[in-house]
Image (cartoon, rainbow, N blue to C red):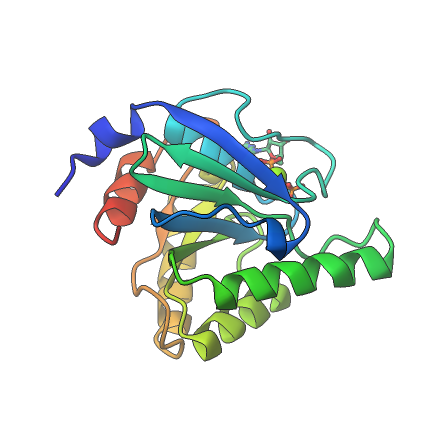
Length: 201
Ligand SMILES: Nc1nc2c(ncn2[C@@H]2O[C@H](COP(=O)(O)OP(=O)(O)OP(=O)(O)O)[C@@H](O)[C@H]2O)c(=O)[nH]1
Ligand SMILES: [Mg+2]
């Protein structure tokens, strides 16, 4: 197996941003996608994993990532930053468009090996997360729940949240049984996530 720490220390480059699946990059590399509610920290986590500050655009304002963004990590795999769900401040028709696009991508991409479903550790699982997980179960797309922003959460509360989510995941056939806890800000939990990703590419 490739050494995960070494792999993620290599160069990661932006490939393309797409708003239409006809523009999907042609590639035989394994893809890992990052999905979750708006503002959960998807773009920040990608930046932290590859140790680049502004590779994926981040913002305080939910709805920052509006396209499907593809990044090539050392010609070994592709990381995909997706628009968030549950964001009400753009028009309904815009939300519908994104949702349709993201769903189509998630269920129809043969090289997609794993979806990281990011969940804000301060808020836990929301209905929109469960809906996303149900959809991935139905499409038999493998996913793992990754808690974000754990620097904002007390350690003991984090343990009980992790256990609670892991028990929910038993009912989700496509879910990885282990929940990982991360902070992009403090760079915690990143090595475990790198290992998990590298083990399936
Ligand atoms: N405290 C803390 N804040 C974080 C962490 N990760 C991200 N944030 C903050 O959360 C906000 C949203 O981060 P983004 O990475 O843009 O979130 P996103 O999920 O990509 O958001 P959209 O693209 O809008 O869906 C920013 O203000 C980040 O600085 C973290 O680990 N800890
Ligand atoms: Mg984003």
